[in-house]
Length: 373
Image (cartoon, rainbow, N blue to C red; front, side):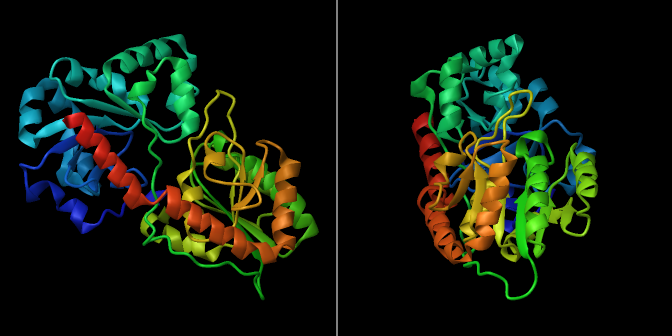
């Protein structure tokens, strides 16, 4: 969905001062995106990204001179630790943490583990996975769920409360600038949703709800941006409703240009839901970005979303998987354009207060400081 766009300061980071303390980071992919600042912009720490992908794939990685091979780490851990001056390990998905427990047990490196959604909800439903998490809870030093909802989830799973600190993902407010939305004098009212095409994003419900709204208000359109296993289902659903011209599916947007997409829309939708396997969100990063631009939003009372949105204050909240409620909220937005600027302004202020990237990265830096003391 998102192209790589790492800036020059990140690309140049590893060669500038090898004596600076480094954190070894591990996440699912090499893609640039919402986690990138947490790896490369936590001064004075420098990030090294661990990868299991072969070196031939590193050529197009946005930070290929800051990558460390998993195989090399396992075969020569002491050499790697010394070479990169690694002082701690930060695993961004708890489902990956078990692979790096040896760095804590054998090499005494402090271990930080993030929880982002699946790792605290559907993953531990299997006994073997819960057993693994219990071991991670016992071994790691610090846990960073992305919202209080997930904090409560992992406490119930057995994670010690004193090891947990909630760390919201932050928004770069210089990139996602505030623009009050007004009702269009010409053209349609534009609804937008951004995220992976998977069940828990709820885009199937959104298409059905939009079909009801469009039947009543023809001057409307919907754009879905993402990619994933549900794309074919969405296209069939769109065709079934006869909305091929009114609903657009875009599979790729350069992350550096994603803010332009937000600016082109009037109303953002985040109809997240719990999928059939029990997988839940934390808080959708796209919702934060949309709110930062001053866009009025519609979202579900799902997982950590109520921690960022207040019904009737920053937008509208509905129950998840309730298509009639979702359609009613979309209709309310259309007939209440006088509320757009109020809700959008409140949304921006909410992001500035609680989800400012600079503030969140400062918190992350302080967590590292305390742990490394």
